[in-house]
Image: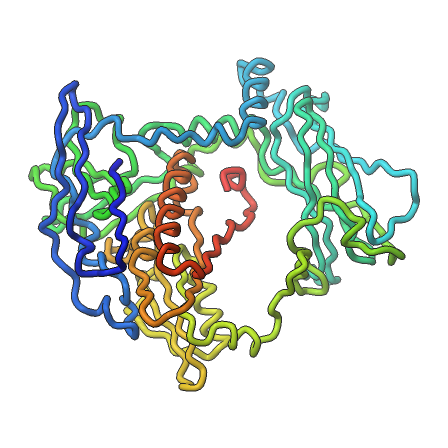
Length: 492
């Protein structure tokens, strides 16, 4: 929407200067929109390294309109997620040709079968297990097109159901209803091959259509203004043709967030935001639930091999679980001892930006290293910023937690939703040779058009590049999202 303001110097004092402008097309007339600059500057706690608000420069600015009432059109990104997933688009095209009436009898179901093809009665570590999946419809006929979403893993559990060992399987879609599964055998023992149908291609088609709506109806957001008026907000309200809206986007780079103009006609500051997930109410039941397919659960016995398992096995994932511990398959070693990890982090600020997953990481980290946690009370607003510090002067460990910008499903004030790009921009690098930054973003925007997510990630990437000009050895880690037991996992 707007050109990013790139700051060559990490100085807070000039961060609100020189807001960008852009010409937009409105009713076939060129207009220049100037972003407002009469914002209230925050208190000085953003300069205090011992404050939970350290670096949170814009917390008192979020929620203020960056542009007054207007008809904002043609401001969607030109990015499209579909260009990155050609196989999915091919499968969706075949599905529309094969089943244009969307007859549920032709949908994939759990009578889909899996079989292991092997000429041996025994496996050894270093071997690769190969299995085949044949998707079937509800009349038990072989499907003739691909796109169904399966998840597979080779696992071992204790008698009480505790998972102790596991490795993810790779699945290749042949686009004709058949799939090939492969998994390297890296551990000896008796394992279970678990294969689940997460979502048939018919359900994927529904999600593609659902998330492509101009005014997405998966999540409903309502803002309360300081005038006590309530308005609907979202990333994109462009379906409201010729209707005035207020632009509450990111004051620094214009990342989108729009609200309807209230009856008063004033784009007053937002004081509170709530949301409601209505996607489950709309998701058709005929697509089924996540469930194991026929043949899933077979036992695979693996003996100790006589050759190097890492060099001989194929399709090795980055990590696997063995005896309740993660094993890394790359040549570098995992730092597994607490004291080694402590030494690694001493005198290096550790920033964690994102959703509740990152927040849980923050608290677990604070527990393990006996850090004292400071910050505003969080019982009602769990994403409030936090800082964890060691009380031992000989072990200087400091960790910061920040939430991320809208869309955010939790009820909260705008000040608790800093954009990740702003949090990265505000990292103070004085007298620091290295920083660690852990990022996690995805579950809150999941039901929005996926191209928005691409745009948000590219904004973060641009900010990381800018940061690396000043501190090239800062380490950024982007954590992937977890698997879940419902159809939305395909969106993940």
